[in-house]
Amino acid sequence: MPQVVGIQFQPVTKIYHFDPGGYTDLLPGEWVIVDTARGRELAQVVEPAKEVSPEEVAGELKMVVRRATPRDLSQREYWRAQEEAALQVCKRKAREHNLKMKVVRCLYSYNGRRLTVEFVAEKRVDFRALVRDLAHHFSTRIEMRQIGVRDQAKIIGGFGKCGRDLCCSSFLREFHSVSIKMAKNQNLPLNPSDISGSCGRLLCSLAYEDAMYAEARKYLPRLGQMVETPEGLGHVRHLNILLEKATIELETGSRVELPASKLWPPGQPEQPYGSPAT
Image (tube, rainbow, N blue to C red; front, side, top):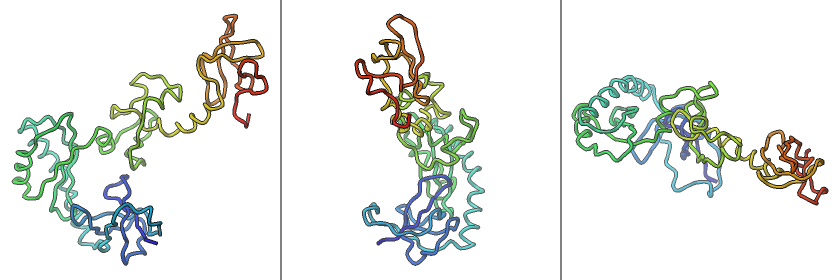
């Protein structure tokens, strides 16, 4: 079975699997030089070598070339120290070229042979003249990379509505699909300011408990559905999914809150709602 080692190129980002080659003793935290489609890169090990089935390997694995040397790491530190100054230059140059883009981050390769400029823009940007200007200024290869607003929030960081560090910048390695249906499924107010993050997109945290809410809903009546209660027939007007309770508007016009176990489809008292545990 093939062996893979998990590495990351930036903190709290996607984990990529590489063939460890002769370095099966690599441990999390170690630095390595790896082969990539963009050339050789410095990366950090986050998962030790492990065996996987051939089906788990997507395409041909790239190789771990060697462990990083002290010289590699000192080069990396030197070029990292230049990134803030490079960012200010790139921002100024973008303004000079009247480009409708926001430069978010500049990243040097560990040996300084490439400068990656990450930016956000609402529309397509013709940055060819900017690239020539930057290449002349920095005397290195320039790579432009357009990123999304969620990526921007991950890079800049900040605090969420919960008062803690943003999920994307503290532990969430990859972004997953989030839909308005998830907010509806959890009975959350659909006010955009309540369910949107600092990036302006739907909160990533909406997905965390969605499966649990979807499972809980299986044992509850739907909103608007007619049900029978010990006090007579009525319609479901509100659901408290976590407590498995429902607010019922009775035919008399009064409203009562009852546990799901005290509700059943009309004429079927032997089939009450509520999870099996209740």
